[in-house]
Amino acid sequence: MSDIPAGIETLDFSFSGGRRVAAFAPVLVGVVGSGNLEVMLEAAAGDGCAVRVETSARGFGPIWQAVADDFFARHPIGGVRVSINDMGATPAVVSLRLDQAVAELPEGASA
Amino acid sequence: MISFAECSARERLALLLDARSFHEWIPPSERLTSPHLVQLGVPSAFDDGVAIGRAKLDGHEVFVAAQEGAFMGGGVGEVHGAKLVGMLQRALRDRPAAVLLLAESGGVRLHEANAGLIAVSEVMRAVLDVRAAGIPVVVLIGGANGCFGGMGIVARCADFIVMSDVGRLAMSGPEVIEASHGVEEYDSRDRALVWRTSGGKHRWLTGDCDALVEDDVQAFRAAAMAAIQRSCPVTLEGLEAEHALLETRLHLLPLETDGADAATWLWRELGIDQPERVPELDVGAVRTLRTA
Image 1 (cartoon, each protein chain N blue to C red):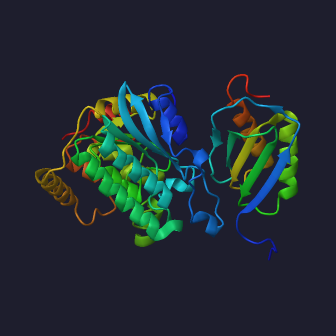
Image 2 (cartoon, rainbow over the protein chains, first blue to last red):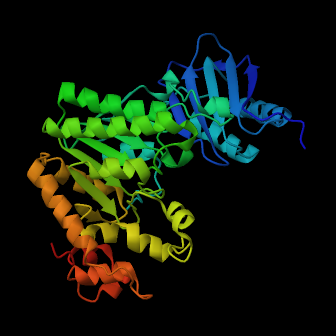
Image 3 (cartoon, each protein chain N blue to C red):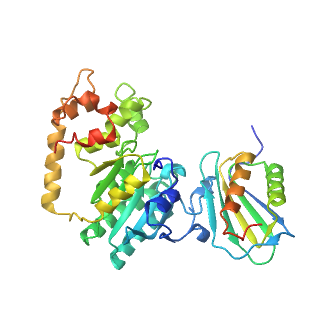
C-alpha cells in the first residue's frame, strides 16, 4: 500500500526576472485526457511567472519543479499566469504543451 | 482534407465556422469547473469539457457548442450540461439562424450521477423549446467517442443530424450492451459489428441521420450550411409517423436470425441491394443506397 493519499495534488511554482509579455487574450492548449494535460496562459499583473499545477498523479513535486525550471529557462517570461490541469502526463508531454502554449501567444508577445 | 474525428473540440470550432468568428461564453479563463470531480480526486477541465458561444457560418449567425471527447469521454456533468442549456435558452431570446451541437459524448458523466442525468434532461427540453421557436438545431457527429446515452437522445431530438461514417450514434454504448446482454449477444470488441449497428452508414441507411459525409471538417461545414436552411417543426403528426416507422422497422427483423448478421438483414429488408457490401463501400456509394 502506498502512503500517498488519493486526490488532486496542487503545486505552485513561481519565477521572477523574466521579460514582461505584452497583454494578451488567454491561451488554452491541450486536453485533460489520460496521459495528457491542458495549459492555460493568462496575462497577470507584475513581472512574475506563476505556475499552478493541479494533478491526479500525486508525489511528483520534484519532477514538476524540474519541468517548470526547464520551461522558465527556455521561455523567461513575466507578467504571466500558467495554469495546468494534469491527468498523468509525462514530463516530455508537459514540456511540449508548455512550448505549444507559448507559441500561441500573439506575435511579438512571447519571449 | 482534415479529419473531423482527429480534431479537438476547439479545433473543430476553429475550422468548421467562419474564420475567427467564434466568440466563446464562459471561456476557460472563468474557471467554471465541476464541483463534483475535485471531491472525487479527478482532475477538472477549465471549460468542463464543452465550449459554447456564438459564431458565423457562411455569414449566418449561429449559436454553437462543441463537446471535447478526450475529457471524460465527453460526459455531461452538471456544469457541462448547464452551459449547453444556457446556450440553448439564449438562442430563444436572441434568435440566431440556427444552433449547432458538435456532439461527442458517452452520455451522462457517471461521476456526477443525478446532477448529470438532470442536466441531460434539461438539455433535451431546451432543444425542443428551440425547435418549437422555429430555430433549427443541427447535430454534427463524427468524433471517436461517438454520441451515446443521453446525448444520443438529445441528438434524436434535433431537426437535423449530420454524421460521418466513423461517427456513431446510439443509446447504450457497446460495452454497456455487452455487460447487460452478454458477449454472445454483442461483442463490444468486434469493431465491424459496432459500426454496423451504430455507425454513420447504418444510421444513414435506416434514416436515423439526415446527411452522411466523409470524415472531413469541410464536408461537415458544407452539410451544416445546408442544414441550417431548414427547420422541422415538432408536430403530433410527425411524431406519430416516426413511431409508425420505428414499429415497422422492429417487425422487419425476426426475433432470431440464426447466426445471420442482423444489421445486414435489416438493410436487405429496407430494400438495399447486396447489403453485405455496405461495410466495404465508400461514403459516396452508400449515400446513393438509401431507399426512403
